[in-house]
Amino acid sequence: MADVAPIFAEAMALHKAGRLDDAERIYGRILAAQPKHFDSLHLLGVIFLQRGDAAAAVRQIGAALKVEPGHILALNNRGNAFQQLQRFGDALASYDRALSVRPDYAEALTNRGVTLNALRRFDEALASYDRAIILRPDSIEAHSNRGNVLQELNRLEEALASFDRALALRPDYAEAHYNRGNTLHALKRYDQALASHDRALAARPDYVDALTNRGVSLHALKRYDEALASLDRALALHPDNVEALTNRGVTLNALKRYDEALISYGGALALCPHDTDALTNRGVALHELQRIDEALESYDRALTLRPDDAQALSNRGHSLHELKRFEESLSSCDRALALRPEFADAQAMLSMACSGSKRRWRATTKRWRCNRIPPRRSATGGSRSMLSSGSTMSWRAMRVLSPYNRIVPTPISMPVGAGCCAAIFAALTSTSGGGKPTGQNI
Image 1 (cartoon, helix red, strand yellow):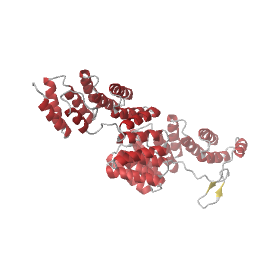
Image 2 (tube, helix red, strand yellow):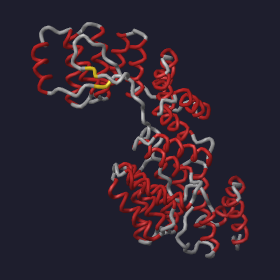
Image 3 (cartoon, helix red, strand yellow):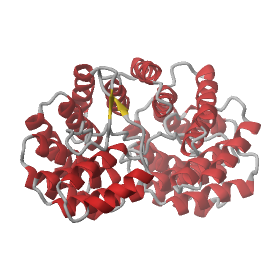
Image 4 (cartoon, one colour):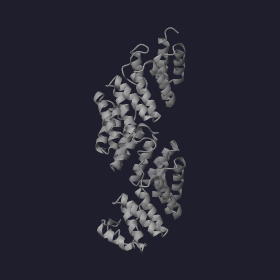
Protein backbone atom coordinates (compact mmCIF):
# COMPACT_ATOMS: atom_id res chain seq x y z
CA MET A 1 0.00 0.00 0.00
CA ALA A 2 2.17 2.81 -1.34
CA ASP A 3 -0.13 5.77 -0.75
CA VAL A 4 -2.37 5.48 2.29
CA ALA A 5 -3.75 9.02 2.09
CA PRO A 6 -7.02 8.15 0.25
CA ILE A 7 -7.87 5.19 2.47
CA PHE A 8 -6.90 7.14 5.60
CA ALA A 9 -9.25 9.95 4.52
CA GLU A 10 -12.03 7.34 4.18
CA ALA A 11 -11.29 6.02 7.68
CA MET A 12 -11.44 9.53 9.14
CA ALA A 13 -14.78 10.19 7.44
CA LEU A 14 -16.20 6.97 8.93
CA HIS A 15 -14.75 7.82 12.33
CA LYS A 16 -16.22 11.31 12.24
CA ALA A 17 -19.61 9.83 11.33
CA GLY A 18 -19.47 7.58 14.39
CA ARG A 19 -18.97 4.34 12.43
CA LEU A 20 -16.23 3.20 14.77
CA ASP A 21 -16.10 -0.46 13.73
CA ASP A 22 -15.68 0.43 10.04
CA ALA A 23 -13.04 3.05 10.85
CA GLU A 24 -11.19 0.59 13.07
CA ARG A 25 -10.99 -1.96 10.26
CA ILE A 26 -9.42 0.56 7.88
CA TYR A 27 -6.96 1.85 10.47
CA GLY A 28 -5.99 -1.79 10.97
CA ARG A 29 -5.42 -2.29 7.25
CA ILE A 30 -3.19 0.79 7.13
CA LEU A 31 -1.16 -0.42 10.11
CA ALA A 32 -0.75 -3.86 8.55
CA ALA A 33 0.99 -2.13 5.64
CA GLN A 34 2.66 0.69 7.62
CA PRO A 35 3.01 -0.30 11.33
CA LYS A 36 4.36 3.11 12.29
CA HIS A 37 1.63 5.20 10.69
CA PHE A 38 1.19 7.66 13.54
CA ASP A 39 -2.31 8.97 12.81
CA SER A 40 -3.77 5.46 12.50
CA LEU A 41 -2.08 4.37 15.73
CA HIS A 42 -3.38 7.46 17.51
CA LEU A 43 -6.93 7.42 16.17
CA LEU A 44 -7.27 3.72 16.89
CA GLY A 45 -6.49 4.61 20.51
CA VAL A 46 -9.10 7.36 20.33
CA ILE A 47 -11.67 4.77 19.25
CA PHE A 48 -10.83 2.65 22.29
CA LEU A 49 -11.23 5.74 24.48
CA GLN A 50 -14.62 6.52 22.90
CA ARG A 51 -15.75 2.97 23.65
CA GLY A 52 -14.74 3.33 27.28
CA ASP A 53 -11.77 0.96 27.12
CA ALA A 54 -9.29 3.36 28.68
CA ALA A 55 -6.64 0.70 29.36
CA ALA A 56 -6.51 -0.25 25.67
CA ALA A 57 -6.47 3.44 24.76
CA VAL A 58 -3.42 4.04 26.97
CA ARG A 59 -1.57 1.18 25.30
CA GLN A 60 -2.53 2.19 21.77
CA ILE A 61 -1.84 5.91 22.17
CA GLY A 62 1.41 4.96 23.89
CA ALA A 63 2.38 3.07 20.74
CA ALA A 64 1.67 6.22 18.71
CA LEU A 65 3.81 8.31 21.05
CA LYS A 66 6.75 5.99 20.46
CA VAL A 67 6.60 7.18 16.86
CA GLU A 68 6.09 10.88 17.72
CA PRO A 69 6.90 11.42 21.43
CA GLY A 70 6.02 15.11 21.46
CA HIS A 71 2.66 15.01 19.69
CA ILE A 72 0.42 17.20 21.84
CA LEU A 73 -2.94 15.75 20.74
CA ALA A 74 -1.79 12.23 21.58
CA LEU A 75 -0.35 13.37 24.92
CA ASN A 76 -3.62 15.11 25.76
CA ASN A 77 -5.74 12.10 24.80
CA ARG A 78 -3.49 9.73 26.73
CA GLY A 79 -3.99 12.03 29.73
CA ASN A 80 -7.76 11.70 29.27
CA ALA A 81 -7.42 7.90 29.19
CA PHE A 82 -5.34 7.95 32.37
CA GLN A 83 -8.05 10.09 33.97
CA GLN A 84 -10.69 7.50 33.16
CA LEU A 85 -8.50 4.90 34.88
CA GLN A 86 -8.12 7.28 37.87
CA ARG A 87 -4.37 7.20 37.35
CA PHE A 88 -4.22 10.91 38.09
CA GLY A 89 -0.47 11.18 38.54
CA ASP A 90 0.09 9.67 35.10
CA ALA A 91 -2.59 11.92 33.61
CA LEU A 92 -0.94 15.00 35.09
CA ALA A 93 2.44 13.94 33.71
CA SER A 94 0.95 13.48 30.23
CA TYR A 95 -0.68 16.93 30.24
CA ASP A 96 2.51 18.51 31.59
CA ARG A 97 4.50 16.87 28.78
CA ALA A 98 2.09 18.36 26.23
CA LEU A 99 2.47 21.77 27.85
CA SER A 100 6.25 21.51 27.77
CA VAL A 101 5.94 21.20 23.99
CA ARG A 102 3.30 23.94 23.68
CA PRO A 103 2.80 26.09 26.80
CA ASP A 104 -0.25 27.82 25.28
CA TYR A 105 -2.17 24.57 24.79
CA ALA A 106 -5.46 25.60 26.44
CA GLU A 107 -7.11 22.19 26.23
CA ALA A 108 -4.25 20.53 28.13
CA LEU A 109 -4.40 23.28 30.76
CA THR A 110 -8.11 22.64 31.26
CA ASN A 111 -7.65 18.88 31.50
CA ARG A 112 -4.73 19.41 33.85
CA GLY A 113 -7.13 21.38 36.07
CA VAL A 114 -9.58 18.47 36.07
CA THR A 115 -6.81 16.15 37.24
CA LEU A 116 -5.61 18.52 39.94
CA ASN A 117 -9.20 18.83 41.14
CA ALA A 118 -9.43 15.04 41.41
CA LEU A 119 -6.19 15.13 43.43
CA ARG A 120 -7.81 17.80 45.67
CA ARG A 121 -5.09 20.28 44.79
CA PHE A 122 -7.70 22.97 44.33
CA ASP A 123 -5.57 26.10 44.27
CA GLU A 124 -3.34 24.62 41.57
CA ALA A 125 -6.41 23.51 39.61
CA LEU A 126 -7.84 27.03 39.77
CA ALA A 127 -4.56 28.47 38.48
CA SER A 128 -4.59 26.00 35.58
CA TYR A 129 -8.14 26.95 34.61
CA ASP A 130 -7.32 30.64 34.84
CA ARG A 131 -4.39 30.16 32.44
CA ALA A 132 -6.65 28.26 30.05
CA ILE A 133 -9.28 31.02 30.12
CA ILE A 134 -6.69 33.70 29.37
CA LEU A 135 -5.76 31.72 26.25
CA ARG A 136 -9.33 30.67 25.38
CA PRO A 137 -11.90 33.03 26.92
CA ASP A 138 -14.65 31.08 25.15
CA SER A 139 -13.70 27.71 26.69
CA ILE A 140 -16.96 26.43 28.11
CA GLU A 141 -15.34 23.52 29.92
CA ALA A 142 -12.72 25.75 31.56
CA HIS A 143 -15.37 28.13 32.95
CA SER A 144 -17.57 25.30 34.18
CA ASN A 145 -14.75 23.29 35.72
CA ARG A 146 -13.38 26.47 37.32
CA GLY A 147 -16.75 26.80 39.04
CA ASN A 148 -16.35 23.30 40.46
CA VAL A 149 -13.01 24.18 42.04
CA LEU A 150 -14.41 27.39 43.49
CA GLN A 151 -17.24 25.36 44.99
CA GLU A 152 -14.69 23.03 46.60
CA LEU A 153 -12.93 26.10 48.01
CA ASN A 154 -16.31 27.29 49.41
CA ARG A 155 -16.20 30.40 47.22
CA LEU A 156 -19.78 29.76 46.21
CA GLU A 157 -20.79 33.11 44.71
CA GLU A 158 -17.67 33.07 42.51
CA ALA A 159 -18.54 29.51 41.49
CA LEU A 160 -22.00 30.67 40.38
CA ALA A 161 -20.41 33.41 38.28
CA SER A 162 -18.19 30.84 36.53
CA PHE A 163 -21.14 28.57 35.76
CA ASP A 164 -23.10 31.55 34.46
CA ARG A 165 -20.24 32.43 32.09
CA ALA A 166 -20.20 28.87 30.79
CA LEU A 167 -23.96 28.96 30.25
CA ALA A 168 -23.76 32.31 28.47
CA LEU A 169 -21.53 30.54 25.96
CA ARG A 170 -23.69 27.40 25.77
CA PRO A 171 -27.16 27.74 27.30
CA ASP A 172 -27.93 24.03 26.97
CA TYR A 173 -24.75 22.81 28.73
CA ALA A 174 -26.26 20.20 31.06
CA GLU A 175 -23.20 19.76 33.28
CA ALA A 176 -22.99 23.50 34.02
CA HIS A 177 -26.70 23.64 34.93
CA TYR A 178 -26.22 20.60 37.18
CA ASN A 179 -23.14 21.98 38.94
CA ARG A 180 -24.82 25.38 39.28
CA GLY A 181 -27.74 23.63 40.97
CA ASN A 182 -25.36 21.95 43.42
CA THR A 183 -23.83 25.32 44.32
CA LEU A 184 -27.25 26.91 44.83
CA HIS A 185 -28.21 24.00 47.08
CA ALA A 186 -25.06 24.59 49.13
CA LEU A 187 -26.19 28.22 49.46
CA LYS A 188 -29.59 26.94 50.68
CA ARG A 189 -31.30 28.57 47.69
CA TYR A 190 -33.31 25.44 47.09
CA ASP A 191 -35.92 26.79 44.66
CA GLN A 192 -33.18 28.10 42.38
CA ALA A 193 -31.25 24.84 42.74
CA LEU A 194 -34.35 22.95 41.64
CA ALA A 195 -34.72 25.21 38.60
CA SER A 196 -31.09 24.58 37.61
CA HIS A 197 -31.51 20.81 37.88
CA ASP A 198 -34.66 21.06 35.77
CA ARG A 199 -32.71 22.93 33.09
CA ALA A 200 -30.04 20.22 33.16
CA LEU A 201 -32.78 17.63 32.62
CA ALA A 202 -34.34 19.63 29.81
CA ALA A 203 -30.98 19.41 28.04
CA ARG A 204 -30.47 15.75 28.97
CA PRO A 205 -33.59 13.93 30.19
CA ASP A 206 -31.66 10.81 31.26
CA TYR A 207 -29.20 12.71 33.48
CA VAL A 208 -29.21 10.47 36.55
CA ASP A 209 -27.14 12.73 38.79
CA ALA A 210 -29.42 15.68 38.06
CA LEU A 211 -32.50 13.58 38.89
CA THR A 212 -30.87 12.49 42.16
CA ASN A 213 -29.85 15.95 43.29
CA ARG A 214 -33.17 17.36 42.11
CA GLY A 215 -34.69 14.95 44.63
CA VAL A 216 -32.36 16.30 47.32
CA SER A 217 -33.47 19.88 46.62
CA LEU A 218 -37.14 18.88 46.64
CA HIS A 219 -36.55 17.17 49.98
CA ALA A 220 -35.04 20.38 51.34
CA LEU A 221 -38.23 22.14 50.23
CA LYS A 222 -40.24 19.47 52.10
CA ARG A 223 -41.86 18.38 48.84
CA TYR A 224 -41.30 14.77 49.77
CA ASP A 225 -43.61 13.03 47.30
CA GLU A 226 -42.02 14.90 44.39
CA ALA A 227 -38.57 14.13 45.78
CA LEU A 228 -39.42 10.45 45.88
CA ALA A 229 -40.68 10.54 42.28
CA SER A 230 -37.43 12.18 41.11
CA LEU A 231 -35.31 9.60 42.91
CA ASP A 232 -37.43 6.78 41.49
CA ARG A 233 -36.82 8.16 37.99
CA ALA A 234 -33.09 8.14 38.67
CA LEU A 235 -33.26 4.53 39.86
CA ALA A 236 -35.29 3.46 36.86
CA LEU A 237 -32.37 4.63 34.72
CA HIS A 238 -29.62 3.38 37.06
CA PRO A 239 -30.90 0.82 39.60
CA ASP A 240 -27.48 0.49 41.26
CA ASN A 241 -27.07 4.19 42.10
CA VAL A 242 -26.03 4.28 45.77
CA GLU A 243 -26.75 8.00 46.18
CA ALA A 244 -30.28 7.67 44.80
CA LEU A 245 -31.00 4.61 46.96
CA THR A 246 -29.75 6.31 50.13
CA ASN A 247 -31.60 9.55 49.47
CA ARG A 248 -34.73 7.59 48.61
CA GLY A 249 -34.48 6.04 52.07
CA VAL A 250 -34.08 9.48 53.64
CA THR A 251 -37.19 10.70 51.82
CA LEU A 252 -39.18 7.63 52.87
CA ASN A 253 -38.09 8.32 56.45
CA ALA A 254 -39.53 11.83 56.11
CA LEU A 255 -42.78 10.27 54.84
CA LYS A 256 -42.73 7.87 57.86
CA ARG A 257 -42.59 4.89 55.50
CA TYR A 258 -39.84 3.26 57.53
CA ASP A 259 -40.14 -0.33 56.28
CA GLU A 260 -39.73 0.87 52.70
CA ALA A 261 -36.84 3.09 53.78
CA LEU A 262 -35.05 0.03 55.17
CA ILE A 263 -35.34 -1.68 51.79
CA SER A 264 -33.68 1.31 50.10
CA TYR A 265 -30.88 1.44 52.66
CA GLY A 266 -30.41 -2.31 52.28
CA GLY A 267 -30.01 -1.87 48.54
CA ALA A 268 -27.43 0.88 49.03
CA LEU A 269 -25.47 -1.16 51.57
CA ALA A 270 -25.51 -4.26 49.38
CA LEU A 271 -23.70 -2.19 46.76
CA CYS A 272 -21.50 -0.25 49.20
CA PRO A 273 -21.33 -1.91 52.64
CA HIS A 274 -19.18 0.90 54.06
CA ASP A 275 -21.55 3.74 53.23
CA THR A 276 -21.79 5.58 56.55
CA ASP A 277 -24.70 7.81 55.50
CA ALA A 278 -26.79 4.77 54.62
CA LEU A 279 -25.85 3.10 57.92
CA THR A 280 -26.70 6.19 60.00
CA ASN A 281 -30.06 6.79 58.31
CA ARG A 282 -30.85 3.08 58.45
CA GLY A 283 -30.43 3.42 62.21
CA VAL A 284 -33.04 6.18 62.24
CA ALA A 285 -35.59 4.00 60.44
CA LEU A 286 -34.89 1.07 62.79
CA HIS A 287 -35.28 3.34 65.83
CA GLU A 288 -38.62 4.63 64.57
CA LEU A 289 -39.75 1.02 64.18
CA GLN A 290 -38.70 0.46 67.85
CA ARG A 291 -35.98 -1.96 66.76
CA ILE A 292 -33.60 -0.17 69.09
CA ASP A 293 -30.89 -2.82 69.39
CA GLU A 294 -30.62 -3.02 65.62
CA ALA A 295 -30.53 0.78 65.37
CA LEU A 296 -27.66 0.87 67.85
CA GLU A 297 -25.78 -1.74 65.82
CA SER A 298 -26.23 0.35 62.67
CA TYR A 299 -24.87 3.48 64.37
CA ASP A 300 -21.94 1.52 65.76
CA ARG A 301 -21.07 0.23 62.29
CA ALA A 302 -21.18 3.80 60.94
CA LEU A 303 -18.96 5.06 63.76
CA THR A 304 -16.43 2.28 63.24
CA LEU A 305 -16.01 3.64 59.72
CA ARG A 306 -16.32 7.35 60.61
CA PRO A 307 -15.63 7.91 64.33
CA ASP A 308 -16.04 11.70 64.12
CA ASP A 309 -19.66 11.64 62.87
CA ALA A 310 -21.46 13.86 65.37
CA GLN A 311 -24.91 13.00 63.99
CA ALA A 312 -24.36 9.26 64.38
CA LEU A 313 -23.01 9.80 67.91
CA SER A 314 -26.07 11.87 68.86
CA ASN A 315 -28.45 9.30 67.39
CA ARG A 316 -26.54 6.55 69.18
CA GLY A 317 -27.03 8.46 72.42
CA HIS A 318 -30.77 8.52 71.81
CA SER A 319 -30.93 4.77 71.22
CA LEU A 320 -28.84 4.10 74.33
CA HIS A 321 -31.22 6.31 76.33
CA GLU A 322 -34.18 4.27 75.09
CA LEU A 323 -32.37 1.16 76.30
CA LYS A 324 -31.86 2.91 79.71
CA ARG A 325 -28.09 2.73 79.29
CA PHE A 326 -27.77 6.27 80.57
CA GLU A 327 -24.04 6.44 81.27
CA GLU A 328 -23.25 5.25 77.74
CA SER A 329 -25.82 7.68 76.36
CA LEU A 330 -24.10 10.55 78.17
CA SER A 331 -20.71 9.48 76.83
CA SER A 332 -22.00 9.34 73.25
CA CYS A 333 -23.58 12.80 73.49
CA ASP A 334 -20.44 14.21 75.09
CA ARG A 335 -18.42 12.95 72.12
CA ALA A 336 -20.90 14.51 69.68
CA LEU A 337 -20.66 17.88 71.47
CA ALA A 338 -16.87 17.73 71.57
CA LEU A 339 -16.97 17.52 67.77
CA ARG A 340 -19.79 20.06 67.29
CA PRO A 341 -20.35 22.24 70.38
CA GLU A 342 -23.27 24.02 68.70
CA PHE A 343 -25.07 20.75 67.89
CA ALA A 344 -28.60 21.28 69.30
CA ASP A 345 -29.69 17.65 68.90
CA ALA A 346 -26.80 16.41 71.02
CA GLN A 347 -27.37 19.15 73.63
CA ALA A 348 -31.02 18.19 73.99
CA MET A 349 -30.16 14.50 74.07
CA LEU A 350 -27.59 15.16 76.79
CA SER A 351 -30.26 16.87 78.89
CA MET A 352 -32.51 13.83 78.54
CA ALA A 353 -29.69 11.44 79.33
CA CYS A 354 -28.83 13.39 82.48
CA SER A 355 -32.37 12.87 83.75
CA GLY A 356 -31.70 9.14 83.89
CA SER A 357 -28.18 9.28 85.30
CA LYS A 358 -28.10 10.07 89.04
CA ARG A 359 -24.32 9.78 89.24
CA ARG A 360 -23.61 12.54 86.74
CA TRP A 361 -26.63 14.80 87.12
CA ARG A 362 -25.03 17.35 89.45
CA ALA A 363 -21.83 17.88 87.47
CA THR A 364 -23.68 18.07 84.18
CA THR A 365 -26.19 20.60 85.52
CA LYS A 366 -23.33 22.84 86.56
CA ARG A 367 -21.83 22.66 83.09
CA TRP A 368 -25.12 23.55 81.43
CA ARG A 369 -25.50 26.64 83.61
CA CYS A 370 -22.17 27.85 82.23
CA ASN A 371 -23.00 26.99 78.64
CA ARG A 372 -26.72 27.64 78.36
CA ILE A 373 -28.05 27.66 74.83
CA PRO A 374 -30.93 29.84 73.63
CA PRO A 375 -34.34 28.18 73.83
CA ARG A 376 -35.70 26.76 70.62
CA ARG A 377 -39.01 27.98 69.24
CA SER A 378 -41.85 25.52 69.13
CA ALA A 379 -44.23 25.22 66.20
CA THR A 380 -46.76 27.41 68.03
CA GLY A 381 -44.27 30.23 68.59
CA GLY A 382 -43.67 29.69 72.31
CA SER A 383 -40.34 28.96 73.92
CA ARG A 384 -39.24 25.52 75.03
CA SER A 385 -36.23 25.00 77.27
CA MET A 386 -33.75 22.45 76.00
CA LEU A 387 -32.71 21.78 79.60
CA SER A 388 -36.05 20.68 81.03
CA SER A 389 -35.42 17.18 82.35
CA GLY A 390 -39.03 16.19 81.92
CA SER A 391 -39.55 17.35 78.36
CA THR A 392 -39.65 15.18 75.26
CA MET A 393 -36.98 16.07 72.76
CA SER A 394 -37.96 16.90 69.21
CA TRP A 395 -35.65 14.30 67.68
CA ARG A 396 -34.17 15.38 64.34
CA ALA A 397 -31.93 12.38 63.88
CA MET A 398 -32.44 12.03 60.15
CA ARG A 399 -30.39 14.22 57.86
CA VAL A 400 -30.80 15.05 54.23
CA LEU A 401 -27.79 13.78 52.36
CA SER A 402 -25.90 15.90 49.88
CA PRO A 403 -24.20 13.36 47.63
CA TYR A 404 -22.23 15.92 45.66
CA ASN A 405 -18.84 14.36 46.34
CA ARG A 406 -19.47 10.68 46.29
CA ILE A 407 -19.13 7.86 43.76
CA VAL A 408 -19.70 9.80 40.58
CA PRO A 409 -17.31 12.75 40.97
CA THR A 410 -19.62 15.61 41.66
CA PRO A 411 -19.46 18.39 40.82
CA ILE A 412 -18.80 16.84 37.43
CA SER A 413 -15.70 18.12 35.66
CA MET A 414 -15.57 17.58 31.93
CA PRO A 415 -12.21 16.95 30.25
CA VAL A 416 -11.86 18.78 26.98
CA GLY A 417 -12.04 16.34 24.11
CA ALA A 418 -14.30 13.83 25.85
CA GLY A 419 -16.89 13.48 23.15
CA CYS A 420 -16.34 15.10 19.75
CA CYS A 421 -13.99 14.15 16.94
CA ALA A 422 -14.51 17.15 14.69
CA ALA A 423 -11.62 19.26 16.00
CA ILE A 424 -9.00 16.56 15.68
CA PHE A 425 -10.08 15.73 12.15
CA ALA A 426 -9.83 19.40 11.22
CA ALA A 427 -6.31 19.43 12.62
CA LEU A 428 -5.30 16.28 10.81
CA THR A 429 -6.72 17.27 7.45
CA SER A 430 -4.80 20.54 7.63
CA THR A 431 -1.60 18.47 7.54
CA SER A 432 -0.42 15.56 5.48
CA GLY A 433 -0.49 12.18 7.16
CA GLY A 434 1.47 12.34 10.40
CA GLY A 435 2.23 16.07 10.25
CA LYS A 436 2.01 18.36 13.26
CA PRO A 437 -1.60 19.27 14.13
CA THR A 438 -2.82 22.68 15.16
CA GLY A 439 -3.20 21.77 18.82
CA GLN A 440 -6.90 20.90 18.79
CA ASN A 441 -7.90 17.67 20.48
CA ILE A 442 -10.62 15.11 20.41
